[in-house]
Image (tube, rainbow, N blue to C red; front, side, top):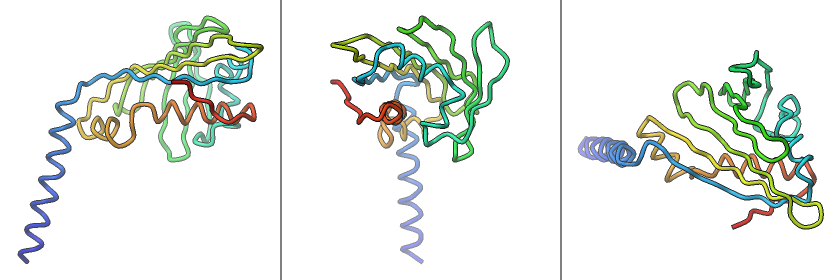
Length: 174
């Protein structure tokens, strides 16, 4: 019985420590990653802006549903294989150089945006930089996002899938 009480005290203390640490972290974060691709900016632009094709190269997606424009911008809902759904909007587009994608609804787990910037390099290649500006209101998820997953995990998964779409291995820039 004593070990059960001690185990329970340890577990409660551990969970409280996670919440306390998460509560001390800033609500917002900025994370960025660069990827070199052997593709022209136009090819990358086509891939990142053609949402109906996303499930063909993003293994985490179950489907994409086009929604009516919001504020004159393209909007859609991504449904992930784990059941999560995200409502997204491309709020700024400057083909083939810049795209700003906002999370319109995530079920209050997080909010924010990704800014995609594409720059030509070398002979036909490009550098894609994705910068995430996000907020995680729940202290537990803020802890997980910062210390367990890392703020760049989703960016890296997206970039790895994008490189795979072109038959390339991801070449992350520092």
